[in-house]
Image (cartoon, rainbow, N blue to C red; front, side, top):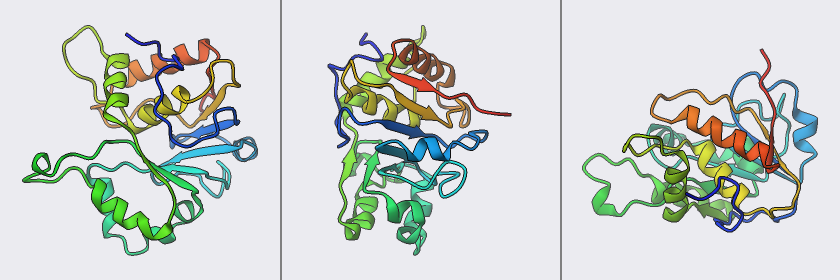
Length: 211
């Protein structure tokens, strides 16, 4: 099984490898972390980016947008989606799931990659789609004692890709707003353990939630 902080496995998302990095999750209790987050050279946020423009700061270089499921469908139906401040300000986008072949996306579509790519195209900004290889690695990292395949969260997938693209001896990424809870289908305990291992290895610093 690969190490959770092994820099030899990369899934580039276009960040300068040695730049300071803030990864900003959406859990409540982040606190007033805005100045520290905005001081990073690269700021990666997720989906609706709770706290953006307020307590978690006003900068975003990369916005990760889930490209499967009901949340994506809601965005596609929102005529003003591209006017949202976090979307407008993002310099690039990350889609965490590979595009499903059309024949696997019927009769009830779950993958909206083609549609969200078309939606974002007028902005003319880079869009990075995480690979099947990255997903296979994520499954290996989170696999437990059972034969069940884990279903990694968007936050975990993107964080894995981000750390994989950073030099081993570089500065630690700063992770804010990760509560490791939510939809019960994600392996939260395993993801928390991966973050703890990455922190112990000096690859990131996980800022605790408040309250």
